Amino acid sequence: MRRPGLSRRRLLSATATGLVGALAGCGYRPGGGDLAWESSLGDGGLLGVEAPRFAVAPDRLFVVRNQSGRTFDFDTETWGSVENATVTAVDAAGATRLDAETERQAVAPPAVTGESVFVPVVGEGVTAIDRDAAGIDPDARETGGGTGGEATEAGDEIRWQVDGIGGDSGTGDSGESADPPGIEGVRASDRLVAVVTGTELAALDAETGDRAFGVTEAWTGPDDGSADRVAVEGENVWAAMGGENARTALVRFGPSGERRAERSVSAPLDWLVRADETLVAGSVEAGTVTGFDADLDRRFSLSVPTPSDRPPVVAGSDGRARRRLYLHRDGAARALDVEAGEIAWERTDAPARRRAAVDADGIYAVRSRAILAIGADGEDRWRAPLPDRVTVDELFAVGGRLIAVDGEELYGFHATPGERWSLVG
Image (cartoon, helix red, strand yellow):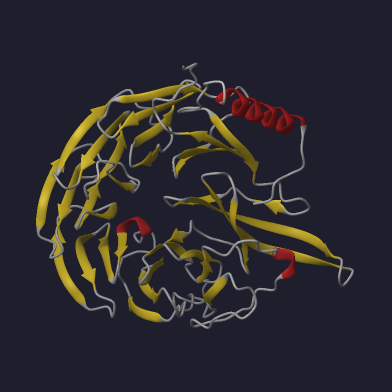
């Protein structure tokens, strides 16, 4: 993530930050909602950039942006065309921790594990990037190609690249080759990468990119397959397979594609989430959220307004293994305690216009030009007004900070409760 030159706005921001530091010595303490830092994604310069795709990890926010256009190579003194994607990561302090590029443009959000960032790209491909590669100069690197899990030599941050994951695209009625369906999305663990492409589910070895197994016709139509209907943990892949006119089959696959557990489900499932040794499945049509154990025996089933999008899962802050899913639907936010198999609390005053940021301490949402923090117990933690210049497009919780995205600008806010600006001592 490249930081721009010092503009008037940044000078004022830096002055304010310095003032905060000075006042801290006099007894002032920054607290929840106070601005900690400001950075920028940049406007791409000569290159046109598309809207970003995001993936959030506990310690970093990952941003993927497609770019295209013409740039000048000063070494060869020639103009060249660029059409690829940048992959950037910023940590809780606003520092750039990753700056890489893929050979081709991204087609879906990335999947992030403890070691890698997996970016689905044009050509039914996936590029695996070392998430800890830092200090990369994209202009001094040439990304090597490769298929079938062949490791790239140029660019240490590129671990491997695989193309043509969906296999033969077949032919159309005219006898000409049909366009490949493209990748709908990816899910990943440190062992396996699950790729949804057309009606097929493919699994790759996360270390090498080699194909582990594939399931053809996992979905009845190309629009039925969705990464939200797939979950990956360790060496297991869960998938809700079927389609609009077919009964849904819930299957757990092993690392070689063996079916370790399977059951039929009466209602179509829109998303799967793995938490607390439980597979949680949501069905908008049935209005249910259901939990299954490793053998896909039902643990609980709740009748509750169910969101169509896959909710994030976070660990509790009480030191226990229990996790919560935050369900946003019909103007309300509901906290599902996965271990207990029950709704822990419900709030009808939580904003639902955009997905809330979540962490172990609760959820954060923007309401009436302010950030509202709701604790894991459902109680208010703090509320803080946004700076006048900030409009929040997206909000993410990363390592004790909230990162607000406003166009190309990033703003980092304190997320710690109970330390609003106050004179102490």
